[in-house]
Image (tube, rainbow, N blue to C red; front, side, top):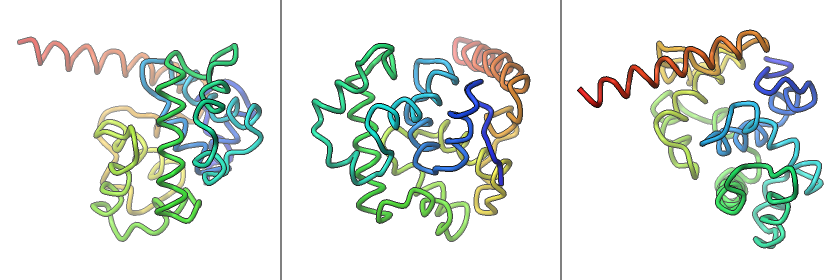
Length: 185
């Protein structure tokens, strides 16, 4: 099991992602229209400002209070209102469907198909995030059910250092450019 996920360049944030499964899921939920480091330092900022990453506490928080936490400078995300709601919705699913234990999303998955369905049911998790989270679970945490979810192209699952993060980001930009080129032709 990984002691840290080197997604942010911040040792405390990187350790939190590996130690608290809900932090990893929140980071993935925030990984939209911001850099990887910005998205994945978000769980640490939320924990510092809110006091906990407990799924039930986040799910039951006053939405306007949670949004204010996301808006506090520096904002947790460039879209603080939308992302506060998304994180609260994610926390509600974890609280309701997994008894507050985010790790159960993958630890109790029967197989790859079940894991894919569980991840895809999380608010804000489309196909790209299913694959990326699957790669992280397979390559950094040894989750057997996640092996078939990991794509052949570079993902965050390949990141094991800050240098690897920089390499991944360059490859991700190239992959996205290639996908855009295919769509426009």
